[in-house]
Length: 424
Image 1: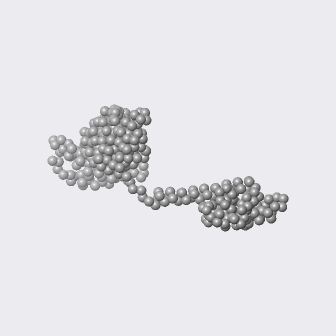
Image 2: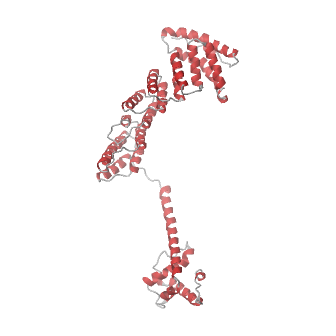
């Protein structure tokens, strides 16, 4: 019935066409049509009419017709317009393609989401890439990336560098590629070395001339420096900085942030002073965070001259003070026995700070009273400790009093100032 509206030829051939359609349905039900699989689909009934028409050429060209009516197929196809046959065949093909597409899509989605693919070890990936290179074939890049992420031991890192060297040779000799691997891959190699803790190999990533096809970058150095920071390893930091200098890698503001943090956390004012001078000489534009650490450390060790020098350098690139840099200047004034200047600095800092940060001035002031004197006194020479203690006990209350007179009244517990342990 779905076929009849399509079969309305002109010139009064309606009855003949209906008879031909009936014969076609009988042909579809005959054993001759049973060998054709997939033409009719129960899930796509809209293609059934098209399938009837597509079936006829198959029966005519390769399958015997029914014995009772040998001429049914030929007579029916001869009565159909060619354009109609072509259109229905095309519709049938599209139907089949749609079915195949959805089936394939469902199969692929099942493979990727329903089943967890086992992760190959670094050893297995190394063997695969080695066989590929020995067969004079460049292995897929995905294998190398997978191996980098799979490294979990020193042996894995050794295998990684071995395959990098072999790939470098293969690229040069067989592919005539002189360029190194891309920078991102090189940073991932250094990240793997830092993750596993094999730092000797990590340092090799920073050398300009190496046999691994690795391009040294400051980003690779930052991975290693972060490892040194996490472990408070100043020796590793010094090695990295030495390699950076020998290979002329440009220092960055981020490098200074990490180095300054390591020096501060390990209480190495000598190293911070050394590398700070190197960063300044290299023209690195230090960030606000680096200046804060540098100035706070200078106040912690009681070096007022360094505080003013650093503040002068900071003022060239950063206009506003932070709580840390502002209170470092306050401490510098106290170290030079200028409590009135210290009070004026606090008032000016309080005035220009954002409203949400002004409450923190009291916290910093309390730390100055309760913690800083003990810290700075113990770092002085033994003969100078007593004099500094007496000076701070006398000048800090004067600073608080001067603040109140100028209109900035912040209550501070001064009792802790007089309860400091005796300098030994």
